[in-house]
Amino acid sequence: MEFLSIFISGLLLLVSPAGLIADRAIAKSIRAQVERVEELQVRVDNAPTHRLLQGKAERVRIAGRGVWLRPEVRIAVLELETGPIDIDRKQLLQSREQPWQGGVRLVLTEADINRALRSLPIAALLRQFSINSLPGAAADQMESYEFVNPRVEFLDNNRLRFQLELQQQRNGNDRGFKLAILAESGFQVVAGRRIELVAPRLEANGNPVPPILVNAIAAGVSRGGDLRRLEANQILIRLLKLEVSPELLEIAAFVALQPPASLPGR
Image 1 (cartoon, helix red, strand yellow):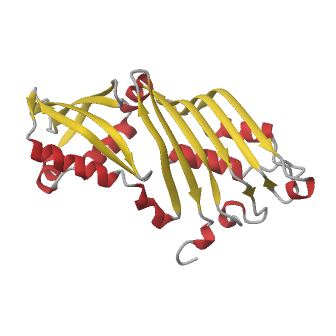
Image 2 (cartoon, helix red, strand yellow):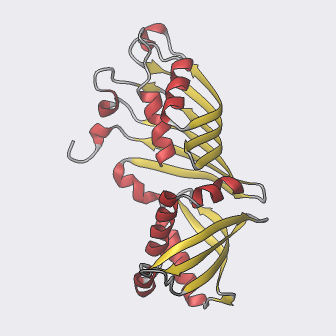
Image 3 (cartoon, one colour):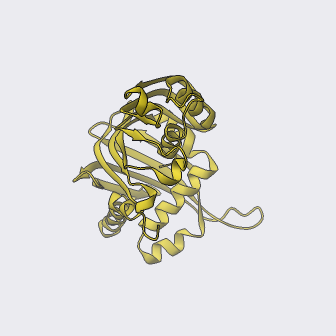
């Protein structure tokens, strides 16, 4: 959700000195909040002038190509189209007057993902997600391993292959036990809110992993990929598309954020 937060906050904080939401101001703020953008287009469908003076717009459309969120994290294509935006000029993000909603489309290349996987922050997130997806005893054992050389390969038929080495953490020069992991699976979206693995397979040092463990891991991934977990934080996401080809991974989603004032305890 980090990329979405960056772009939404860029939209909601942008009011020109005259009180008008402006294409150039939005583009400038977005560029300031990310590492760099290779190509960026912004279009604001303006409301009548008196509404613009109140910080309102009918729709904002953003199309970015080569969006670098961090030096090692690139999104090939990021497109965002909002519904009506209504900014409380006194409170800004602390008190939006109406829910924000819009559509998001992401395209990632194999090279983009592999570059990100080589970064320490992304590798740490991947490791934690993997631990959370494993059954109890296996998760405990995983705590003593680090991920080495993770890489992904896009395949036909909406499938991808993921490979890495698990290196046992040791002190000194002894690197300990190493295990080569290969995982391959297809994906499907269920009811727009959950990602499930399709015909997953898993190998360890070239040997097939027993189906009972593969199924347990697949169930853990499905639980972790259930977007309903975000609804407790007033975030609604519905996946409209998740498609993998040998060239690209494409994701399209509808996103709605409720006003912070509606959160429990506020």
